[in-house]
Length: 177
Image 1 (tube, rainbow, N blue to C red):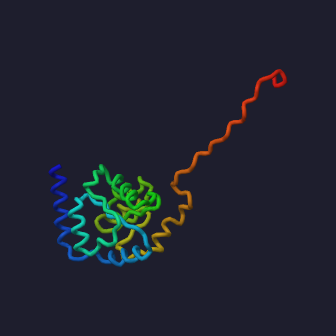
Image 2 (cartoon, one colour):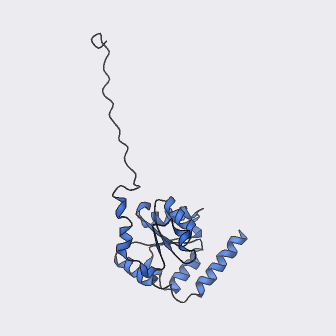
Image 3 (cartoon, rainbow, N blue to C red):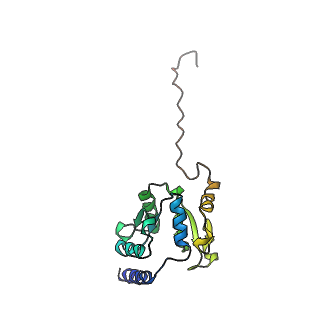
């Protein structure tokens, strides 16, 4: 627990030192916002720090939901599913932007698409992702929608079980024997 707290403190200190978002992020979020695609931030940091970072970078207005440590989720997959619930979206209609192979795996375990950001990990570590990019400036809303083009209307969606009606029982008579 102490190690987790120390790591969280290091991450939050480094994020608070940033004066502006990474290149292309604000433009990407503007495009997504214009297309009226809801967004959530999922983090293992605490909510207060996450909100402070988003406000400092001028990104708070782009996110309709925030999932953080206080939400009590045990794993990354649980956090991602919680974000889908908060956005009122089916997980199969969500895209996760992740720079860690474990996050890509968690997204796929939740039936979500995964876009990998090359940087913290090399491209060969992120081959499981549905799309890998060097930065947000390589993305477009059309490319994002194309991720779902091959899935069809029933990809990973719950299907109703077909219940066949049992034929009426016949009474056994001498004629049927």
